[in-house]
Length: 443
Image 1 (cartoon, helix red, strand yellow):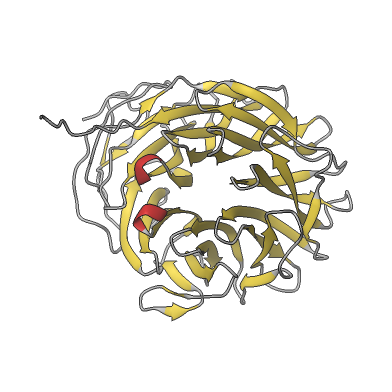
Image 2 (spheres, rainbow, N blue to C red):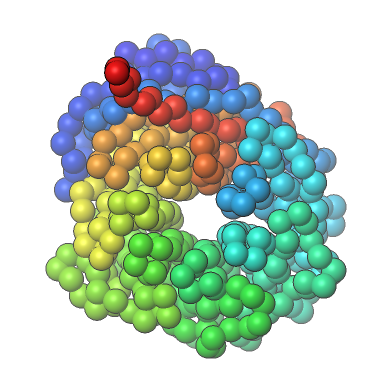
């Protein structure tokens, strides 16, 4: 049994137990007490109580529309940078950012790019060596949406510097989209990954290495994955234990199926082995005869492993969130159902944070049609806490497209926060602190 109210409060759930999944699951639904979010039987072993939540707070409130938040954690100053896309009057798209203290205090906000044309699809990563961020985004080069390029800007920890301007990462004469970036500590560089959209060929995934000192690029952009089927929605994680990356994306297969693929790359971008059985180059991570799409990936360096999550309809007519463990060599591990109800769950994001634990977050549909934000903790040992509420919806107002990153003792979750009636959307957030109990030692 569970108890939930349609508000932003922390709740505790009781979960059933079942073994890991190796095929599409069959789940029996059970209605909730308030019938606000219809539950299905949980399939994961609870390990501990949910993290302690601080109050929900506004990150940026504006009469315009604020979209697509992303988060980086600053390990030197113990704070976060939240970056998002803002749609201003006249359908002008700009990238904004705000520093958030580890206790949730709002620090300065600023515009990331001063260029006149539209900017969209931000991603951000932090470099503790140079104590600054790289923010990447797509830029409307010609001002008419005919050529979107990947641009970036280095942002010092305290805010933008006039001496550090936007620069081009990919200037192909076609459209690029959905860039993501990660910092590689051993390499002292960033890897930026994106999707290329061309009229003559199927969309494909490319990447480029960017030197963190701002001196340029080791090489030109290179192809990560291409073929006759469209590829989209890349994500990337860096494993400092091996100085390697795992890049993931989805592939539209024949018919209505969409699958998740990945590739393990060396620090220099060379394809390595991965998958089960092991192959050199790209390999399938989730390939059932249904829709598995929009993957998110995180690396847990302490455990030398990855966790990949995605949304899937499993041919049932509603979407759920699944995840799969991969070893440091990208060998495929067990598949788990993170959450499934009789309504939809979309847009998973994840991080490996305090104590080396993953936090998976997603948007969850209620019976009234609005979306709230939920989360679930997972351990490298493949034990799981119960799912828990981060922020529920309000009447005609969604909480959606969550992002998460982990600090030294907490996680920060941010999301699009509709104003009642959907007139506009702001960016809101919540800090989650996981309590670790030390053993009592008697002398």
